[in-house]
Length: 264
Ligand code: 15L
Image 1: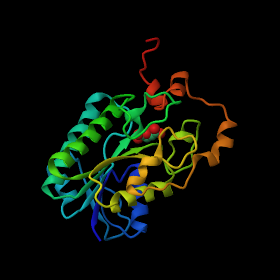
Image 2 (image 1 turned 30 degrees about the vertical axis):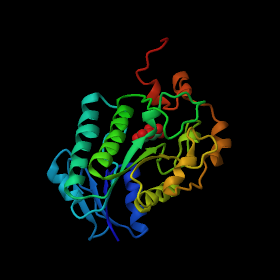
Image 3 (image 1 turned 45 degrees about the horizontal axis):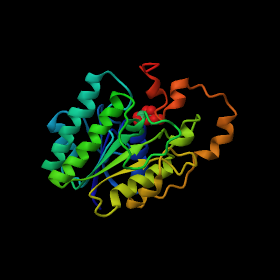
Image 4 (image 1 turned 180 degrees about the horizontal axis):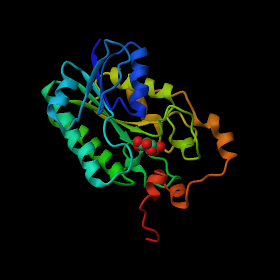
């Protein structure tokens, strides 16, 4: 079985994947910025700053696939985004070249498309419409995956993750953006096992009736989500929607309304 590197294992999605993939028998090396408490004495752990090539080397040596979740995962001032999501990503991809990593699965985000109106259904080839510097960094990350496939032959999958928190959807927006844990584990296993993907993007949401995205093209890697946020719709719709008017208008929700210039 091939060795899989998982970065960002200390985060919410990273923790779910660390335990879920381990339970499914995958051979993992997991990395966090801070030291992680081992789940067993023999767990293969790395920690440190991925802007440092030596840390990247420890993460990637002997691995075949990298699931790259590390980085800033919310809107932050630009210098932090540049350090964690742009500079670190270059180091990670250069490390993938040095170590002959076959495939990088990059955690992109719905926020690279957050300025689309909620009424619009997006396809995989819809243009980026980031809702902030964080979403913009994900557009950069997707383009980097494209570059390293076209120029260096490293396969890439950009996972445009919606809302994946390891719990049921909690508001109207999440009826469209939710990704259930079971679907997420199935999606990642498809990202690991799908043959010859070259470079592709995939929407990382469940089979939500109110999805903002057209999932029909996700079948390229064999992703067949079975969970649906609609199962929680009745209780969510019975509560008042606390989102502000701008957040209600755009797919990125509160990320779109943050620092929004009105009346333009
Ligand atoms: C993301 O990309 C964020 O990392 C996460 O914190 C959530 O905000 C999620 O998107 C979402 O849109 O719900």
